[in-house]
Length: 356
Ligand SMILES: Cc1ncc(COP(=O)(O)O)c(C=O)c1O
Image 1 (tube, rainbow, N blue to C red):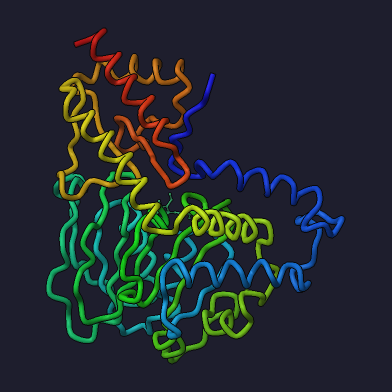
Image 2 (image 1 turned 90 degrees about the vertical axis):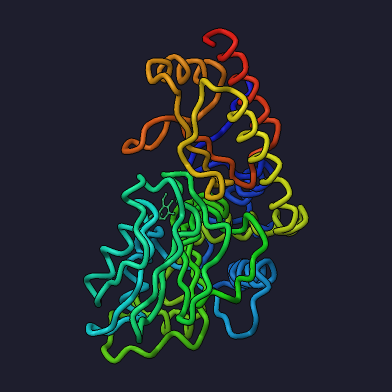
């Protein structure tokens, strides 16, 4: 039976990336050594890092004002590392709280400075995106989460603000073209659209770093990572390699315009199918619906367990909603094929015929 991988992360990767990564575990670039065995300061790994960095710049069409880092840890590390680098204790940063990840990010920032809540959608269970309120003078940056993996919302319009914009793009990185030069800092854990867990992509506009008055530990310091070319200490070599392969795949397939075309096709198919099957209900407002993670419910909660059981029987992996939200969550990252979404939609239809 074909499995359809709708996991929210770690999640589906292109088959060719998995094959190349598996080969490299045995013999990396005909060196006779495994990618797990080579030194991070070798020329061979230097080429991997350089290609990963330049692919990010190419895909995002970044100007020369930007640096690209590959750092240890998940996005949660960045919840701390961003404010640690950008704030002094008396400074204020603004956060849009559109879901649990944005809320966690804001909480971490309180350890380093003042936090102004620029938007908070808790009152509607995070079923919509809300634009930021007027920011206090001297706000150091505004933080948004471009895609809310848990709640199934996404920013389809980037806010116009006159302070540096910082974005957690963990779950929609490289899913669509956008003016990435509007952001001062972009970060993402790799394990959804970019590769294997263990590495963070951090994109920084140079002018925002190095302004803080107090020193911070070297391993947390963006400036020192920039100076060391992401090689201050041993980087997560394999995870960087898988990211490089995935970025190469995205470029080969047609870049971000092609990712957007595929993601739009999948998302349109799924949401249209849900809209045509009243057994299912979507709480997220239409203009805020995520292309990456569709979150929805059975109108009759008693039908949820049988529907999930049917999904399991039919090889639909990872469709149970997040533990605090419930319902169903279908993640449709770049590598997921339209045929998997079609198979899921066929199941919706079949289930409706049986239970409608
Ligand atoms: C949008 C977003 N931010 C942050 C995180 C946390 O990432 P990590 O587990 O890599 O720390 C996640 C995890 O799913 C996420 O979806």
